[in-house]
Image (tube, rainbow, N blue to C red; front, side, top):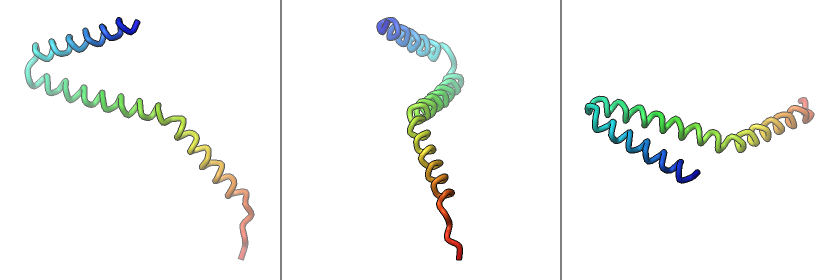
Amino acid sequence: MVEKLFALIVVLACAVMLLRMAVGARRVQRVDAALRRATSAAQRFASSVWHWRDKRKAAARAAEEAIRRARKPRKLH
């Protein structure tokens, strides 16, 4: 299974390199820019998924703290 996945990645990389050689320089620049944007978006998505649980716990702690402060009796002057 891992070998097939690795082979697929290699085949895709080779296909992309072959297409880059076949098209003009201007289109290569456009494709490179699109790939950079897609890679950046994928990294942001992966980071948000990776840190999702931590953010959720922090939000729950903040909510609990706000509820605790709201329940605390206030001193009137």
